[in-house]
Length: 311
Image 1 (cartoon, rainbow, N blue to C red):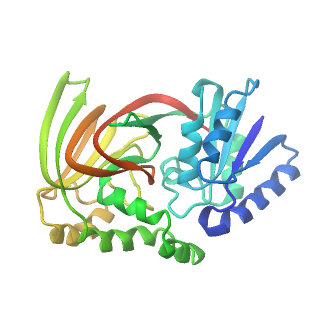
Image 2 (image 1 turned 90 degrees about the horizontal axis):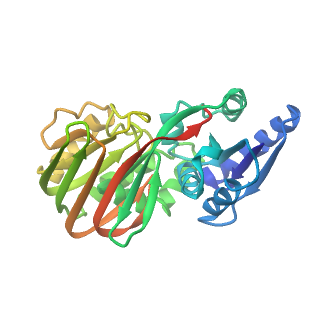
């Protein structure tokens, strides 16, 4: 059975029109399904929890929404082995859809989902805070500049206005530029774990501007933080910027947006199985662009090949 979790308000209202089209196509194709509409923030998580525990041997959970709704749903899944997961993207960033090569056109996306058999397995990241808050992520999790931007972007008038012009991803770039020069940098101690080398490396990063832990190659509406990131390699692909002036980071933003930053001074790109990092000051933390909290200690790791996606 197909179970749809629908957020009408994704993409500043565009999601409602998308669902109307998908609903029409499902009926036209005589597909048996059930649909649940989210009523408030966090509701998708509760719906996913309920759906994933139904007495059904073939649960196909489909999210019609943006990256935030997708994140809520994946955090609600109780038993990954019982669920096949699909998305019809409606948000402004759509980084997870980009990561799994899901078409943005709703009819094409539905065709992909309906034609998929069991799908393919991908990794899921998880972050644990100093107050024992646990949050899964599919795209990325991080601290610093990108996390502050994500926190601001959730209720941004700029984002809502640009969404109406179908330019929603530009809001991330605008907020990044305006936030960069106002933010404080961090002093962070990072313990990097890699089972392949059996070696744990500890670093001290001064003047950290951001650290992004990527499962997909891009976040923030298509910014390729770590172009080498793969969804099924059992690794988190790190992109960290530290030890350089903020003004220099500003001039490197075009290089970052083109994915040509790997060898630039101040950038660190590295594949890891997990990490623990601590800061002297509280750090803004996000998971898939959703604000998690202001924390001083974080643990991140990857759960390999756990989620079956219809893509």
